[in-house]
Image (cartoon, rainbow, N blue to C red; front, side):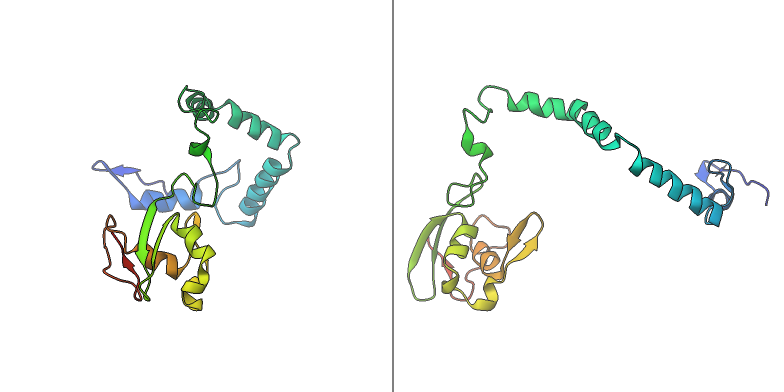
Length: 172
């Protein structure tokens, strides 16, 4: 098949893309998808993984990267350092977590609870919720359960504030 033009009237030519897919050479091996092509690709991948010192070179490259250096510089700025503000770098799972918020909710029996860190409260008081509502699952970067999401929906600052969840209401 003859090579078609890559552009027609300033737009990519789909026929060229098909031609390129079938005929482009990789290290002298023509036609993608052929056994020779697959062998070359696996050989190149093997070389990248098995080369001695590859991991050390990768890590040294990461350490020398400008993004990492900028992040280290930012962490050393007075007022932002870990020594001056350890709470900013805290990974405490309790009430002192850096992203913990103040909560005030009333349960179905009328008892009011005031606490910081909703996740920590639900973990410590799983007996206040139905058993099927306290099954923890991964959601993004954190663990979540239905009880946590239901009580979180009561917070007035949320986009869709719920009036109540299974008898739980926001206490102001």
